[in-house]
Image 1 (cartoon, rainbow, N blue to C red):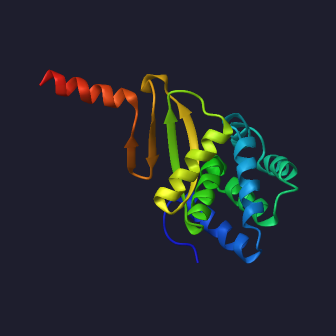
Image 2 (cartoon, rainbow, N blue to C red):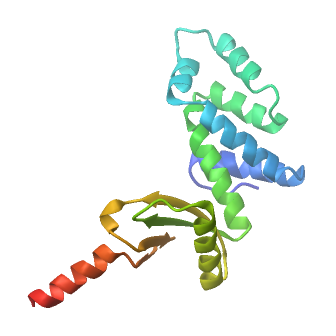
Length: 176
């Protein structure tokens, strides 16, 4: 039974319940991620255009998602009927978040001063997993202002080991 919450979360919870029953959670996740990329703001505007008859919009969406799981097609049809199709990208994100939480995956954002290659990224993820005893799903960003080192955001915890922060701290100490 879905829990309370925002509309995207309720749709995501319902889809997760069905995906779990069908043992198709990874397939549903891939499908929703792909649909979220396909249903760009321009596509959503076109699908919501009141000048186009609802049945014509419904057929267009049905044709576009004909190869997707039945439950996802049903939810998209319901969202279209209720003029909530714009929620699709948020539903996909909520679904992924629910799956990650259920699997004990924690999101991390790692910001470095330079671009890291795949092996460096993998090394950082492994070190974070060892330090937190959790499975980490990391995204990486570059901010040249850091000068060196890195900032790591895991949930509401920020670990700032950047050279910029160390220099700022040293400057404050010298100024006092």
